[in-house]
Image (tube, rainbow, N blue to C red; front, side, top):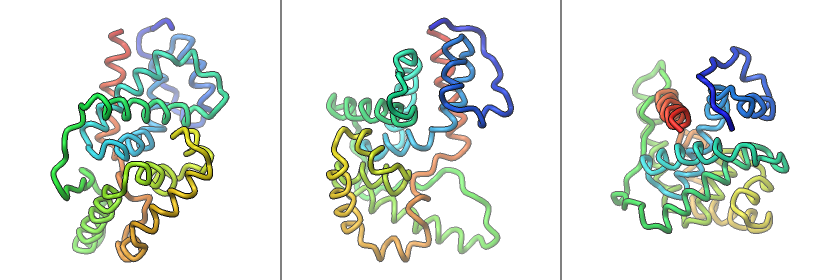
Length: 223
């Protein structure tokens, strides 16, 4: 893949299909890769964090996953959706990092509250919602590895059963079974009374998105 100087993505880039963007990147418009990163930053982050349970490790994995995806973009055959292919790369990188013993032990009971929050008319109510969301995230972190990854990809990120199965290299039946067990383990009352939906957990807000995009583009252009 030949690299060219950065090209500013078109303003209507979000309307372009993944395949269209990939073709442009392969044609030398390296900066267009930013569109793909911004589309899937939160999904990749959630997938990595579900395995690593550590924010910094997850962000490191994100960068490496994107660099790996860029380096092998010409191998993307389109047999699966690009988002599924990318998620699988992030999961493989996360699992490899765990196996290599590079994962730092997180403090007991730590929960990661988002660094940026939406404005709220009622600051007190908003503060309570943030706290409860932290409890929900902490509860998700207590799930065993297999259950946690399935729950995050299926219920938090919203992937289909088949997409989760492909991402984790397991059968759809395994995904369904683990999801039922994960939901039961979380105790539905915690989610029902938390004031936050599962989709609110482990959000990847704009400042972090910008930081990851800038770091990955710098690494790509330096190759």
